[in-house]
Image 1 (cartoon, rainbow, N blue to C red):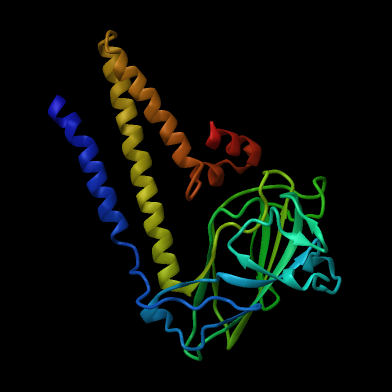
Image 2 (spheres, helix red, strand yellow):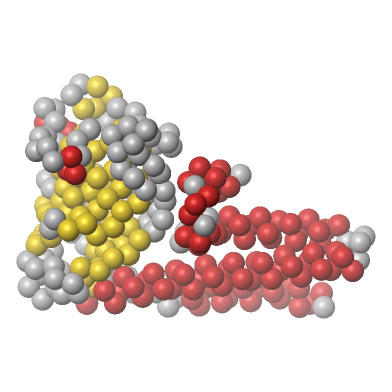
Length: 277
């Protein structure tokens, strides 16, 4: 029995490594970066080179929301018309003032696509704390409620994958972000663009890894708690079982965030507190 217990962590690690190895291969060449609000992917082969992080310089409109219907105007400070994503906006200087984590902004990026690009998908991981992402005027995904104040905005943090069936020759992305809750604000995760099969396969593999980890750690916790009930003197089994349950809960509120997806009504504050605790 003890030898089986010693082998269990090794088997879990080996299985996790195997699942991670099933993810799509990395790009064979460095992906282009956005410059001055434009990302040129006309020479990029999504099938051969894989997906692309939409990193680099996006147009930056501080305290302006595209959904308000007003015309977006660049900051008078020419050094801040562009914002490098992914990043936090804390400490950025706009109109001569250093901004804090609380606020809202719109980011725009034009992506030039190869003629063969078709059936693309977008992946966004854990954007804090509220955002909407549109492409060519059509909203792709949203997270929480974007607003211009604490009263008319609400936070949430869920990964999302959406498909773009007809991309055409270019995609004009508009990303609205608001933050009035965490200390740091801004689009911290990357926005990933790739073929539908690559993005969906990567999503599936992440889910498989996390489901395997949750199931394995939960099983170990149940086993050690059962062992403690049979042998009340085994306090180490009790502590390890409780620890395994805590790790299971934390795994459910991070990464793909299964618990948040199952019980979103509990609210962002509770899940964020559980994650840090």
